[in-house]
Length: 497
Image (cartoon, rainbow, N blue to C red; front, side):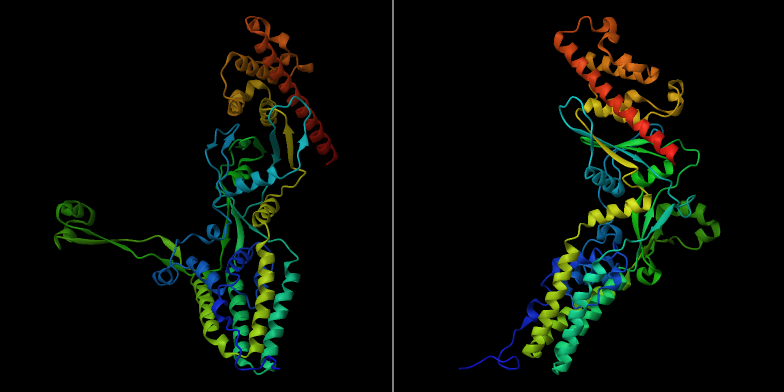
């Protein structure tokens, strides 16, 4: 009876064929978390599978003729490439400054997703189609260089990933030592190469800081209050212009060190001025210079760009690791190949753990941390009808002043109501008039929201129209009651503070 021993030369696993491809998607996805956790870039010292996929994917960040030929594909900025930017946010309508943005950016998208997932406060009242309104009270953000390019470096959050990383790191180190103990220097070298290649790549690619980049603003700008509108979910943002603009126009930016990005200048574009342009050349350069030659060469400087050569070198190292493993793994012993596969299995499990993380949620956490928002400043309300949501949002945006100053401040409540419900039938017109009358007078017991207050304007209405108007006015009363509760809560919080 024959037995198979681990040191027999006639049996070979030949794992080199899939060494660089196995677990490629998981490895690429795991690398996307390298900026989202503190110290994540220091925990890549293990023999990771999928080196070819990672190298080819992230090699496209490097920009030059050489790197474009080595890693062809579309060259995005690292922030967009890794997924920290690029999502389109909902439209934004300001209530006082007159700003209207048909489309906001990635940060507004993240805030909208965060608010959609928040547990809402259920507002009792008539129900037709559920609408949600989130009231967000922006906190004062202390930017660096706020007058020119407001920015804020975000400190990545801690996570238990660093404790989990001990498992693949220890497995790779132990298997590497066992290969050396068994005198299998091929597999020893390949595992060690995998440890170094993945560790160096994580360190270089994760060396950037995440910066919250905003836009310049005027100190005399009015309040930035406004609405982000995404279907049946509306976010009412209250705060200073500089803080609200951070959500609507700001973005995340990856700030790499100079040794990683390696600043370069694109090739200058040469322009030849000849023939019919001679007279213009004469005027531009002077008579003497123009007469010296019928053709004048002019050079225009190209825009400044970054090559990210360090990332390109790491990607090249990962591809070379794959080629080396492909060629040399069959030269190792069966024991060494088993150790190599063991290190791969442990690393793949860790990559799978990282890939399973909700990266969008981690970005939301970074945004909440950077802006100082929390559940105390973000409250979501679930309202039963669109009309209730419209009045509630309009009341939340109402400035603290008399209605005589509304126009001076740029506040137009009727336009806010029309953003929710643009209907222009007589029923809706009277409903808007009564809501505005109630907002102006702030009468007790909601006198303007009573059907009797409509006077002779509804004399010709049918029973169905009267019933509809009565329901709409009732919705407005529901919104007012909830708004009063919200105001009372704010006063109590301010008195406590």
